[in-house]
Length: 162
Image (tube, rainbow, N blue to C red; front, side):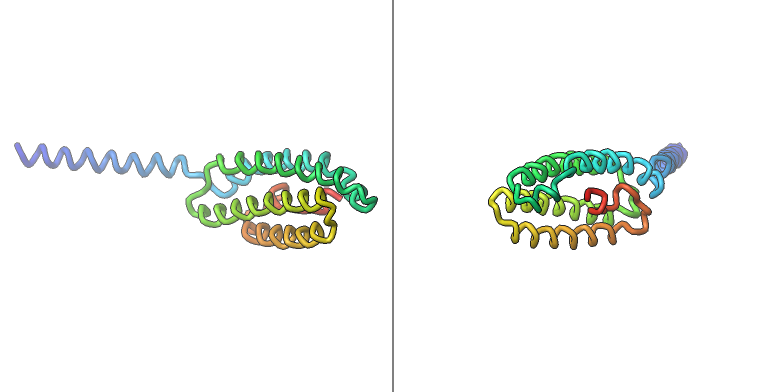
């Protein structure tokens, strides 16, 4: 009797473990599903940034650095909101490290946008240009990290805002 109870308990635990594995794999997100969930978030941010940055280049060229700096401050707010939304999306376990690295680059991107805005507000166009170069380098690192995902809107493309 003791052996039957132990065997029944063992079988029950195996069944629960099997169900747990099945449930975990059933809820496991694929890379394609992840991309499908984050692309609309990135698209909304891209469209917002088109509006925010509309005319910024002309303002910098015309020496209206304070006005351009406000655009960067607005972009930082929108981008940080986007990063929070992206962080809330579950990531495929196999891509967890890669996506965490990518999100880190996005946070650095936000920092550079803020620096450029501060540089422009201070009237330091040369420093803003230097930080812009750093921003573009960071964008390339972010894009290269997730190249295999085939992102469209989640790929950082500064030419969309020119």
